[in-house]
Length: 114
Length: 113
Image (cartoon, rainbow over all chains, first blue to last red; front, side, top):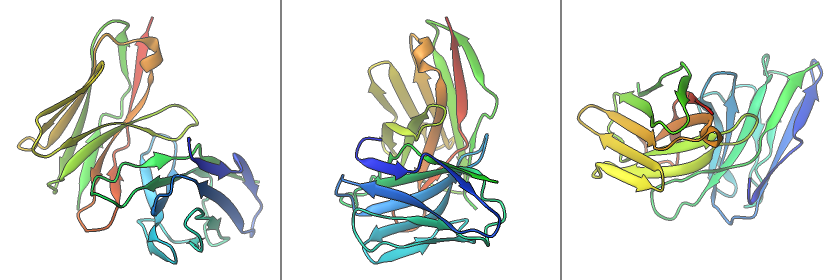
Protein backbone atom coordinates (compact mmCIF):
# COMPACT_ATOMS: atom_id res chain seq x y z
CA UNK A 1 0.00 0.00 0.00
CA UNK A 2 1.48 3.34 0.95
CA UNK A 3 2.33 5.23 -2.22
CA UNK A 4 1.11 2.57 -4.62
CA UNK A 5 -2.50 2.54 -5.76
CA UNK A 6 -4.02 -0.37 -7.60
CA UNK A 7 -7.49 -0.21 -9.07
CA UNK A 8 -9.99 -1.63 -9.18
CA UNK A 9 -9.87 -3.86 -6.12
CA UNK A 10 -12.16 -6.41 -7.80
CA UNK A 11 -12.61 -6.95 -11.53
CA UNK A 12 -14.73 -9.31 -13.56
CA UNK A 13 -13.93 -10.29 -17.11
CA UNK A 14 -16.26 -11.70 -19.71
CA UNK A 15 -15.18 -14.22 -22.32
CA UNK A 16 -13.17 -12.61 -25.12
CA UNK A 17 -12.79 -9.34 -23.28
CA UNK A 18 -9.61 -7.41 -22.59
CA UNK A 19 -9.39 -5.75 -19.20
CA UNK A 20 -6.87 -3.26 -17.84
CA UNK A 21 -5.56 -3.11 -14.29
CA UNK A 22 -4.24 0.21 -13.08
CA UNK A 23 -1.10 0.79 -11.00
CA UNK A 24 -0.03 4.29 -9.96
CA UNK A 25 2.84 5.22 -7.64
CA UNK A 26 4.07 8.41 -5.99
CA UNK A 27 7.27 6.94 -4.53
CA UNK A 28 9.39 8.25 -7.43
CA UNK A 29 10.67 4.72 -8.05
CA UNK A 30 12.09 3.86 -11.45
CA UNK A 31 11.28 0.14 -11.41
CA UNK A 32 7.76 -1.28 -11.50
CA UNK A 33 6.55 -4.88 -11.59
CA UNK A 34 3.43 -6.95 -12.14
CA UNK A 35 2.98 -10.28 -10.39
CA UNK A 36 0.32 -12.90 -10.49
CA UNK A 37 -0.53 -14.90 -7.36
CA UNK A 38 -2.67 -18.03 -7.40
CA UNK A 39 -4.03 -19.65 -4.21
CA UNK A 40 -1.29 -21.31 -2.21
CA UNK A 41 1.39 -20.22 -4.64
CA UNK A 42 4.10 -17.64 -4.65
CA UNK A 43 4.40 -14.57 -6.81
CA UNK A 44 5.07 -15.09 -10.49
CA UNK A 45 6.50 -12.20 -12.50
CA UNK A 46 4.46 -11.12 -15.52
CA UNK A 47 6.26 -7.97 -16.71
CA UNK A 48 8.67 -5.47 -15.26
CA UNK A 49 9.98 -2.05 -16.22
CA UNK A 50 13.18 -0.45 -15.00
CA UNK A 51 12.70 2.86 -16.79
CA UNK A 52 10.07 4.82 -18.67
CA UNK A 53 9.33 3.58 -22.20
CA UNK A 54 11.03 0.26 -21.56
CA UNK A 55 9.72 -3.01 -20.16
CA UNK A 56 10.68 -6.67 -20.15
CA UNK A 57 8.78 -9.94 -20.11
CA UNK A 58 8.78 -11.92 -16.92
CA UNK A 59 8.18 -15.63 -16.52
CA UNK A 60 4.50 -15.69 -17.54
CA UNK A 61 4.00 -12.80 -20.00
CA UNK A 62 1.83 -14.68 -22.51
CA UNK A 63 -1.67 -13.24 -22.68
CA UNK A 64 -0.68 -9.98 -20.98
CA UNK A 65 0.54 -6.59 -22.18
CA UNK A 66 1.88 -3.47 -20.46
CA UNK A 67 2.94 0.08 -21.19
CA UNK A 68 5.19 2.52 -19.33
CA UNK A 69 4.57 5.96 -20.77
CA UNK A 70 4.95 7.73 -17.44
CA UNK A 71 7.17 7.05 -14.46
CA UNK A 72 4.15 6.98 -12.16
CA UNK A 73 2.02 4.53 -14.13
CA UNK A 74 2.36 0.91 -15.26
CA UNK A 75 -1.00 -0.47 -16.44
CA UNK A 76 -1.46 -4.17 -17.14
CA UNK A 77 -3.87 -5.44 -19.80
CA UNK A 78 -5.15 -8.97 -19.50
CA UNK A 79 -6.04 -9.95 -23.04
CA UNK A 80 -8.50 -12.52 -24.29
CA UNK A 81 -5.49 -14.71 -25.13
CA UNK A 82 -5.01 -15.33 -21.40
CA UNK A 83 -7.24 -18.36 -20.96
CA UNK A 84 -6.98 -18.65 -17.20
CA UNK A 85 -6.90 -15.09 -15.88
CA UNK A 86 -8.55 -15.69 -12.49
CA UNK A 87 -5.93 -14.69 -9.91
CA UNK A 88 -4.75 -11.98 -7.53
CA UNK A 89 -2.62 -9.40 -9.34
CA UNK A 90 -0.02 -7.37 -7.51
CA UNK A 91 1.89 -4.32 -8.64
CA UNK A 92 5.19 -3.43 -6.99
CA UNK A 93 7.86 -0.75 -7.25
CA UNK A 94 11.49 -0.43 -6.24
CA UNK A 95 14.26 2.10 -6.38
CA UNK A 96 17.07 1.38 -8.84
CA UNK A 97 19.67 3.29 -6.83
CA UNK A 98 21.76 0.68 -5.07
CA UNK A 99 21.30 -3.00 -5.68
CA UNK A 100 19.04 -4.17 -2.91
CA UNK A 101 15.72 -4.06 -4.78
CA UNK A 102 13.41 -3.86 -1.78
CA UNK A 103 9.96 -3.97 -3.31
CA UNK A 104 6.84 -2.10 -2.23
CA UNK A 105 3.48 -3.56 -3.13
CA UNK A 106 0.02 -2.26 -3.83
CA UNK A 107 -3.09 -3.76 -2.27
CA UNK A 108 -3.79 -5.92 -5.31
CA UNK A 109 -6.60 -6.51 -7.80
CA UNK A 110 -8.60 -9.71 -7.73
CA UNK A 111 -9.68 -10.71 -11.23
CA UNK A 112 -12.41 -13.24 -11.86
CA UNK A 113 -13.99 -14.57 -15.02
CA UNK A 114 -17.77 -14.35 -15.45
CA UNK B 1 17.20 -23.51 -12.80
CA UNK B 2 16.89 -21.55 -9.58
CA UNK B 3 14.53 -22.99 -7.03
CA UNK B 4 13.28 -21.62 -3.73
CA UNK B 5 11.49 -23.86 -1.27
CA UNK B 6 9.42 -22.89 1.72
CA UNK B 7 7.38 -25.29 3.79
CA UNK B 8 3.93 -25.36 2.24
CA UNK B 9 2.34 -26.67 5.41
CA UNK B 10 1.12 -24.08 7.88
CA UNK B 11 3.08 -23.64 11.07
CA UNK B 12 0.77 -23.67 14.07
CA UNK B 13 2.25 -22.52 17.39
CA UNK B 14 1.17 -21.28 20.80
CA UNK B 15 1.36 -17.61 21.67
CA UNK B 16 4.62 -16.73 23.38
CA UNK B 17 6.65 -19.42 21.62
CA UNK B 18 9.29 -18.82 18.97
CA UNK B 19 8.24 -19.42 15.38
CA UNK B 20 10.93 -20.61 12.97
CA UNK B 21 10.34 -20.59 9.23
CA UNK B 22 12.71 -22.04 6.65
CA UNK B 23 13.72 -20.93 3.17
CA UNK B 24 15.94 -23.23 1.09
CA UNK B 25 17.32 -22.50 -2.34
CA UNK B 26 19.23 -24.41 -4.99
CA UNK B 27 21.28 -23.71 -8.11
CA UNK B 28 22.06 -20.19 -7.07
CA UNK B 29 24.27 -17.98 -4.92
CA UNK B 30 22.25 -14.88 -4.11
CA UNK B 31 23.84 -11.64 -3.05
CA UNK B 32 21.04 -11.13 -0.52
CA UNK B 33 17.80 -12.61 0.73
CA UNK B 34 14.64 -10.82 1.79
CA UNK B 35 11.65 -11.72 3.93
CA UNK B 36 8.14 -10.33 3.42
CA UNK B 37 4.89 -10.66 5.32
CA UNK B 38 1.59 -11.05 3.49
CA UNK B 39 -1.84 -10.82 5.10
CA UNK B 40 -4.88 -12.34 3.33
CA UNK B 41 -6.04 -10.23 0.42
CA UNK B 42 -3.18 -7.77 0.81
CA UNK B 43 0.16 -7.13 -0.87
CA UNK B 44 3.39 -8.34 0.75
CA UNK B 45 5.24 -6.00 3.10
CA UNK B 46 9.03 -5.98 3.37
CA UNK B 47 10.41 -7.05 6.76
CA UNK B 48 14.14 -7.76 6.62
CA UNK B 49 17.06 -8.11 4.22
CA UNK B 50 20.25 -10.05 4.88
CA UNK B 51 23.34 -9.94 2.68
CA UNK B 52 25.43 -12.97 1.72
CA UNK B 53 28.27 -11.88 4.00
CA UNK B 54 25.99 -11.49 7.03
CA UNK B 55 25.21 -14.43 9.27
CA UNK B 56 22.39 -12.87 11.26
CA UNK B 57 20.11 -9.82 11.23
CA UNK B 58 17.71 -8.67 13.92
CA UNK B 59 14.79 -6.27 14.07
CA UNK B 60 12.78 -6.13 17.27
CA UNK B 61 11.31 -9.65 17.73
CA UNK B 62 12.48 -10.80 14.30
CA UNK B 63 15.73 -12.57 13.51
CA UNK B 64 16.99 -13.85 10.18
CA UNK B 65 19.99 -16.10 9.58
CA UNK B 66 21.66 -16.84 6.27
CA UNK B 67 23.81 -19.93 5.74
CA UNK B 68 25.30 -19.84 2.25
CA UNK B 69 26.90 -23.26 2.74
CA UNK B 70 23.58 -24.92 3.52
CA UNK B 71 21.81 -22.57 1.08
CA UNK B 72 19.27 -21.82 3.75
CA UNK B 73 17.73 -18.91 5.62
CA UNK B 74 15.85 -19.20 8.89
CA UNK B 75 13.30 -16.60 9.97
CA UNK B 76 12.50 -16.44 13.68
CA UNK B 77 9.73 -14.58 15.50
CA UNK B 78 10.29 -14.61 19.25
CA UNK B 79 7.50 -14.17 21.81
CA UNK B 80 4.99 -14.74 19.03
CA UNK B 81 1.57 -13.08 19.14
CA UNK B 82 -1.72 -13.85 17.35
CA UNK B 83 -1.12 -10.65 15.36
CA UNK B 84 1.94 -12.34 13.83
CA UNK B 85 -0.37 -14.77 12.02
CA UNK B 86 0.23 -14.28 8.30
CA UNK B 87 2.06 -15.80 5.34
CA UNK B 88 5.79 -15.16 5.21
CA UNK B 89 7.60 -15.10 1.87
CA UNK B 90 11.31 -15.25 1.21
CA UNK B 91 12.80 -13.72 -1.91
CA UNK B 92 16.19 -13.82 -3.63
CA UNK B 93 17.71 -11.43 -6.12
CA UNK B 94 17.73 -12.63 -9.72
CA UNK B 95 20.83 -14.03 -11.38
CA UNK B 96 20.97 -11.40 -14.11
CA UNK B 97 21.64 -7.71 -13.76
CA UNK B 98 17.97 -6.80 -13.88
CA UNK B 99 16.02 -5.67 -10.87
CA UNK B 100 14.08 -8.87 -10.33
CA UNK B 101 13.28 -10.91 -7.26
CA UNK B 102 12.42 -14.58 -7.14
CA UNK B 103 9.81 -15.35 -4.49
CA UNK B 104 9.14 -18.53 -2.60
CA UNK B 105 5.57 -19.75 -2.23
CA UNK B 106 5.42 -18.72 1.41
CA UNK B 107 4.68 -20.39 4.71
CA UNK B 108 1.51 -19.61 6.63
CA UNK B 109 2.01 -19.00 10.33
CA UNK B 110 -0.87 -19.39 12.79
CA UNK B 111 -0.32 -18.24 16.37
CA UNK B 112 -2.91 -19.55 18.80
CA UNK B 113 -3.88 -17.36 21.80
